[in-house]
Length: 368
Image (cartoon, helix red, strand yellow):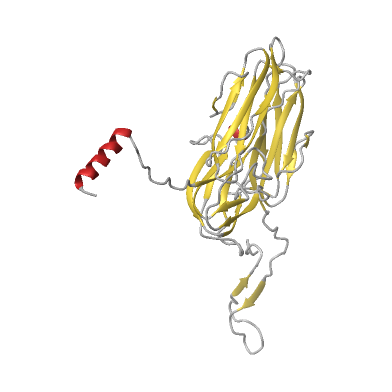
């Protein structure tokens, strides 16, 4: 091919606008963990992944259902035998932190198994594992997406004044790329935070999610009715906790700690208070709660008024240490004369007397 032919072909390429693109780079996979106010498990978590660079998304926010401010961590195990220990990850997330509970990190996964858990005391059942296989695999499975409606309801199940729709999506393959929603068939828009509907009447909110491989979920929906508030009591009670007991120099409670709960409601009045200790079942509060086990403890509590409004679940955290051992052993006292005797056994002049009172329990206080 001579230079004239080459030039003609080049001009033809420019005229028809042919563009040859380089092959697209493989997308970095995304693994997403979410949590809410429950301290017994992660709300969602991946079960499998492929080896290579990975974006970790850790979200513990109001959008994932944590409306009480409960902190959690996502920590990768680096010591338990049988698991990979090549990724160090320990992220604390709270709905009210600087990131509103959503954090990301980039790591490189290798084939094998990884174990993860929450390091906060009392959250010991928040643990799991996922398996990493070698090499990328094609993701053909769309994300899972759900919607939940919250707000104050009247006896008919209608939402008084407003209703809030929270959409949650997860994808254990390539990860969630985005979520969309629409209200009453008005057109899909990106979902970035819970959606509050205040217009009176019947409503339907539709939602869908797309993953990083381009798979889009089926459209889900929730339906509800918003009614006028009027004079209905829609304000939950205010509930507080006070922890009392003898403390040591570090602020820990010695032997026991007593938790007293108090609730007030200026509208319909307080119907009852509930509490649990260290993640146990909620029970009715009738008297101050005495906790005596040595270690860290968390008492969760909430109150409900006579209109059925329940306060957000709150928590009091404290540590109990063992009391010091009481000394009940009296001291031992001895005496000895330190001057030599006369031949007849008497002491001439004076006889100095030495006395000792060693005491292993608390030392000799005094000798008389």
